[in-house]
Image (tube, rainbow, N blue to C red; front, top):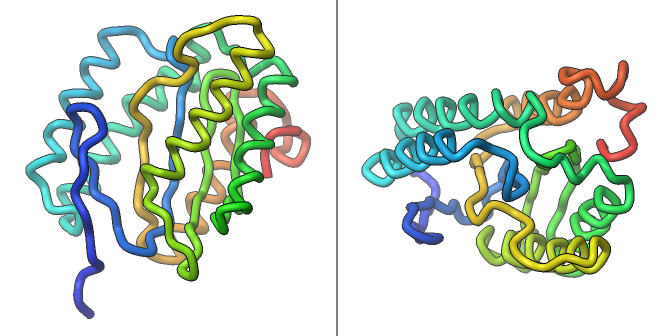
Length: 198
């Protein structure tokens, strides 16, 4: 089986590989969710990915290091944790579900106090690049959050984490991770009790 068609693009100074008709696990975090030194470390790891083929095992291992470094601090609840406010979490949930207007499937998500996860699958009938999807949801939700809080300025960290889901086994594992996130950090005893997880 030939490798999937991939495209390299840059957001900011960091490289990003996008897979045609790919399904993605994405994590978006609030602007203040990580200490500065952790942001610098993540930037180093991400820059290393530039020279690695997205189909290689090394790429997946390096992505895992990136995610685990970020996850440690996000799960500790660093930053303002503004998404604890139900009205703000609701905005993110609304914008995730509004992607249906673009024929983008968001089948699972979890909105945590300082970040959110989602499984995103653009429709093969009307494929949109992941970068375009992320620009829409971050832009619209950020604008609405600022209006609600009567503030201005960036809400989200400019970069986001994404991982291309290669098969159904990986998909199922990622669904379990998303659903278990609020349980793991002791927000609820069962994921079904968390209003911002589906």
